[in-house]
Image (cartoon, rainbow, N blue to C red):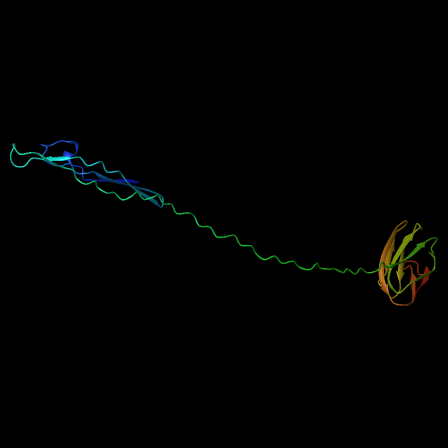
Length: 192
């Protein structure tokens, strides 16, 4: 938005009239607004023109006066508000001590292998240390069998030509094993 204020413009400023009026100085101010910034400037005042007056009669000697120059305030410099920005902040850095993870894995279980051949366990006598024991059993016969350790959860079904595994944790002692389908198929496990 631009606003122009002009004051003091008179008809005689351009030399019109009967010559008996003095020309007034012309002052003008321009104000412009853009966003939040306002700029004000003053236009220069033209130089005063001499005025001539005649006293009473035509035979009198003309008197000439010059008006003192008008003063104008200096134009204000345009002002624009600078955007404000906060100084960057840095969070303190914390370094954690490295963590040490200890993973304890259970030892591999002891392994015991047995096969059924001609309706018998081979070998018929097995041994293993106390603790976790993995049992691997296979069937070489054309009939189905089981490998069952008495007093434990080990009970592996063995289809003809098939195999199976089971794991159990056993304390030291003696354990009998057998085939549930053929009760005369037996053997002995010693855990020390």
